[in-house]
Length: 201
Image (cartoon, rainbow, N blue to C red; front, top):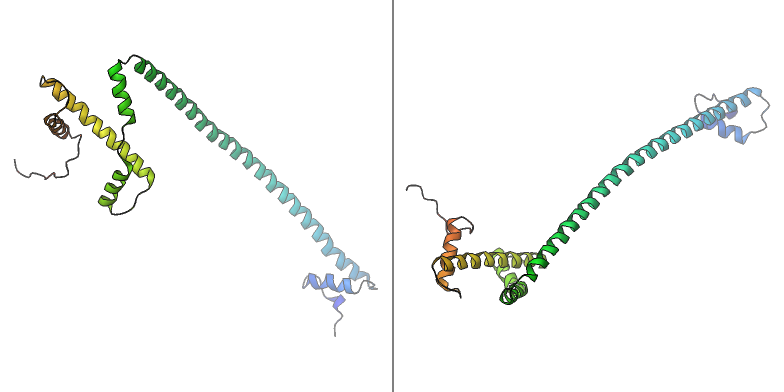
């Protein structure tokens, strides 16, 4: 049988190191040099690995700096937008305060009623569910009730214009409302669900 200490290091370097560990008191000087080479190679490779890791760490740090500056830019943009929105909101609030302060008593009462009025959420939810056939979230109900309020306000405004053009005085009557709806439909401000395309005129 061959002595495991005499196996060439190129063939099986792992076996060589383990064999040398098993037989530390070898008399051959060649064995010592054989075991010294892989250790030196391991030291060199470990130093190269450390250098590579340091290079990767430096590159990662550079990328982190770039990403940090990019993230800072991205954070700065929303902050600027928020500041602009706050300024616009403050301007609108001031304008509304000036407008409300110049209201007469009747206008103030009407404005209060307008602000307090809202469609019942339960009725809106029932209507949406009957049309879509599925349940909807509370946010959808709130949005639809707000849109409905705006839509009703547009019809009332148009009806008031109709009443004024006809030389009549409020309160509004059903004929004013019907005429307002007809005018809004003719201007395509109300979607016509019963619309049929006419091929020949």
